[in-house]
Length: 134
Image 1: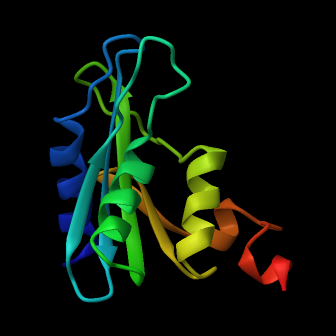
Image 2: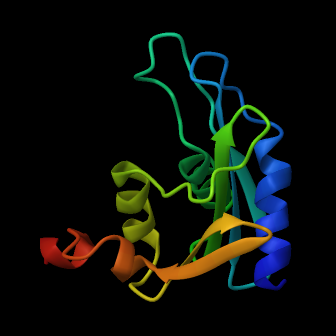
């Protein structure tokens, strides 16, 4: 799967988002080293704290099915029907990515028409991870 196809999969995942409070809909498409794609969307809750981001939804789906090797994730989001030019992952999602991915893990941000690939290292420098617990 190429980067554009992964971005388009994130747009499809966004259609399943449940965001009745913020109106900000996010979709993520996570690519495994084996070529499988796990899609996730944000799922809000009236009390906000139990809300889950699209990125973590995709990771948790994949990990719960035994996947541990990932190459890239595409993330799109925006208010209502419009896509934002950039929908970067929150800090908690970056921490989850650090748990399962190396510093060279690719994070695609933007829209299918205009996106850029970032390394996890670029988005989350000086992160704390499992190597720090050795």
